[in-house]
Length: 313
Image (cartoon, rainbow, N blue to C red; front, side, top):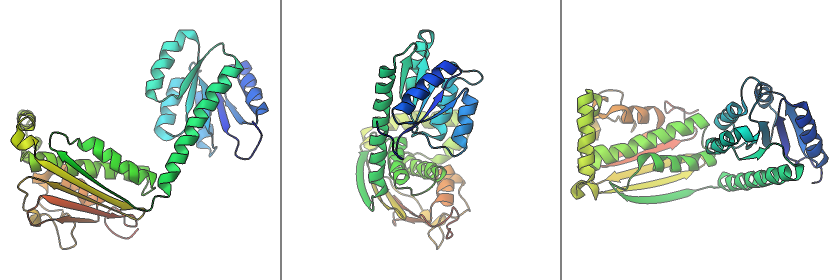
């Protein structure tokens, strides 16, 4: 591998000086940028100091925080940064389990450098492909999608996550904002399922444990009743880097939405109790909320340039 400004930069984390020297010298000789740390704490400090790494190669057993704890922190804060674990045979089962927690691969000690190189290059290749795929979405200028579900097929959480993923890849907002939009989408879909097609009252969910249990039992019964389960939910989603529009139509009887919206097409702060946290979340996150006359179609509109209170940002 030739040396270049774009050469991958690896962070090697191990408390054994021999391992650090061996891997550092080897990958430096291949043209990689290499930084080293003797503990998870030192590695975290380097990550937080503005250093840019393409991959972390860390031992599982470290003084203080373990390599697995380091993996967890990286997964929560830099989820696009791959981590390869170095492990002895005694901790092999732990390393294999860690793959389910986000590790990209593992290498057993003792190792030969050719094997290490192959695994590192494989992981970096996958990361490069993933980043190039994300670049496609960064250049996306307009997206329009339409979904049609029966009540029993609809999974609010999964669909909300998929739609918010498009916003994330288009850099529509911060990570925290994207999570909030996902929550607003989820609540909107839940309302279409539970209070729309299944015609369940939201009051039951905010009462005693007994009533909540009865609510869930009645929900399950109606999901197995074709009269409710085969009703349709239509979802239309349109977005560009500056604005998104989500429209959800259910086959329920609708409701008197005029009591809950103002002239600016925003959810009013008054009398929200019967409709629970769904309306509360939408009220604080979405610029405009429109309903059809029957009250069984809702459209959410969000402009990227407005803040949580609907004012220009």
